[in-house]
Length: 357
Ligand code: ADP
Image (cartoon, rainbow, N blue to C red; front, side, top):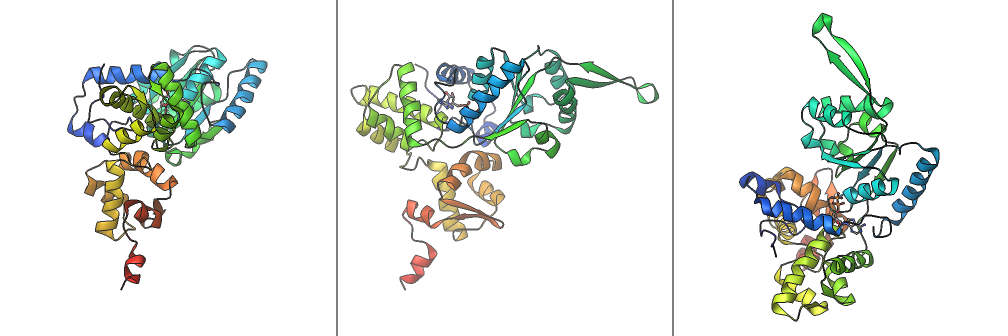
């Protein structure tokens, strides 16, 4: 069995800083990673757990598009990584009975990248662009008429002899995904017919995700074992799936192969994932703000530099959950550790400390 590299974040995110320092990633890991994620990715609404409100709205929208025999409106999904944006795009495609092309903004650097992909689309197909907030201006401008009128405006020739050519495109649906809706330009955001935010999952929902994954991977797990892993999965299915696999290795080697509450808790303690699901980086971040900056506020760049982390990793991966869990606060002057954050680390808040004297 292939094992995930230790350099891989347990949240399933290759750290940007790690990649910068180690540009060569073992290809077998990448392959393995993709195969693993795809093998457990839900393919229909029934196996897509949680996000109830979103699913209900989508079902109606899809049904209406089918009845009208028109392609679906362009959709934008936003929320932290691992919450199921790519997965829901795949479910939509399956439900509509159309193909889906998956790409991401950094792969569309040159105009010909986006033109090529648009021209190769067939009627009704879905184009999924991940990290869409990272599209460059030129690519965005090519997308505007494509999204609005299903045309490509191309310029041929130079200066005085230049001509603009309107090339018709088949009617397609663009599904954009982003961790940062705020960074999308206004004109691009306005061209999406629907914008949805994906929510963190409840413990009960993650327990279902874990039981489903365990069944597919033939891992034996009890209800309490699944719940124990769910509690430490930061509200995120991708993390839940990673953890269940990691814990199953422990169960196999150290125990009798079955994941119960005790096995789950013991394994996660060994992996240094605490009861809130925080890992080493999260705790280092909170500790840094408390110890070096009196609990904050402190700017994100300063935090990233002190932790030798990439600002994007901190903003996209660490912060959303720390904010949602109420351990960290965002203020106009920077990030602050909340009283709950102090409590979680077992450190007294400054006011509790002064009360002692
Ligand atoms: P994102 O695109 O938001 O980063 P993905 O769609 O790639 O996240 O989901 C990450 C993993 O989590 C997938 O492999 C999938 O198996 C699992 N997953 C995501 N959402 C759900 C869900 N609602 N139910 C079950 N599994 C899910």
